[in-house]
Image 1 (cartoon, rainbow, N blue to C red):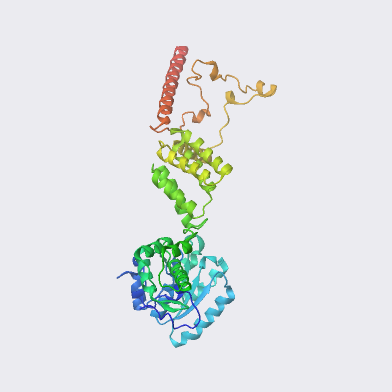
Image 2: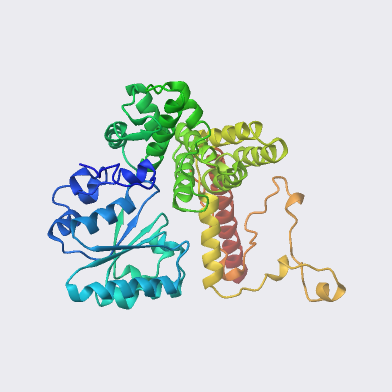
Length: 450
C-alpha cells in the first residue's frame, strides 16, 4: 500500500503524501517498469545504474527516484537545479562519501537537471564515474539538446509518458479515502462522471489531478458536506491550462504535427492541432507565419491562392486579434489541407542553392548583361538580346538565359497536380520549341559549311 498519509505532523500536499513506496503501487510507465523490463529488474535486483528520467510534469519522475532509493535501501539526496550550485553538489558528494565505508549506496536525485550549465553538469562526472553516488536526473526537456554528451554517456535515458486515464482514475480511488480537512478524514462522495471530468482536466498529470481533488475536498469541507458536485469542479478547473511548453519539445512536436496534417491533406487533423496549440497558449501569429511557409513549401504553384489566403489570415490576426483572427487562420489551414500539393518550388530552390554552393562562379552571358553606360554598350553588354514581348507568344525558342556551360540545367520540375499540371504542359511545349530551334540552327550551320 501507499505511505501512511498521517504519519507527518507537518502539512504536505496530497500529491506528496500519495507517493508510492513499493514498486507494486507505482502507476503508469509500464513500457519501462512492466514485468521483465530491464529497469524493473535492475530495481528488484538492486543492480542500479545512473539514469535520466525525461518526461512531462506530474508523471512520477521524483516518485520513481524515491521509490528506487526505498527499495534499494539507499541514502536519498536531492538537489533542485533551479536553486542549487556547485557548492551544493560538493555537499552532496561529502554526504555520499560518509556512508560509503558502511556499504550503503547513495542516490543523488537532481530535479530539472537541464537547468544546470555545462560546468555544473561536468561537476557530477568524476563521482558518477567512481561510484560515489548513483545519479538520477529528471528533466522535462530533451536531454539530447540540454545535457552534456559526457553526462549522457554515463546515464541511461528513460522516456516517461503522460499517465493514461485509467491510471489517474486508480490514483483518485486510492486517494479518496485519505483526504484531510478541518473535519478530519473525509470519505468523499464523488460520481464516476465527476472523476472522469477531473481526470480529463488533469491532462495526464498525476500531481494536477491530486491537487484538484484536494481543493475540491477543502471546498466540500467548508460547506460541511462530503459531496463533490460538478459545480465545485467547474469552479476549481476553470482556466486550467493544457500542457504546453513554448519553445520546448511539445511545442515543436505539435507544430510538426500541424504541418504534416496540412501536407497530408487532413483538414480535421490540421484544425485539431491548431486548436491544441492555441488552447495551450501558443501565439496564433506564430501559427499564421508557419502557415505561410506551408503554403509555399507544400502547395506552391499547384494552387498559388493558398499563399495569398495564408497572408490574408496573418494580416487578419494582426489587425483583429482573437477570435476573428483565429477563424481566418483556421480557414487558411483547412483550405491548404484540401488544396492540391506540390513541393516543386521548394525542391527547385534547394537544388539551385546546392548547385550554386558547390559549382563555380559563372559569368553572366553578355547578351543578358545590363548596359546603363556607353562603356558597357561598347563592350557589347545587352547586344543580341531579344525582347520576348516583341514576339507573338512572348516566347523566343532557343533563347538561353543561363550561362552557356549550364544552359540545359533544370531545377524546377512541376508535379502533375493542380495548376502545376498546366505549367508542366507549358514548359514541355517550350522545350519542344527549343529542341526544334536547336535542330534548325544545327541544320543551317551544316548548310553554311557545305
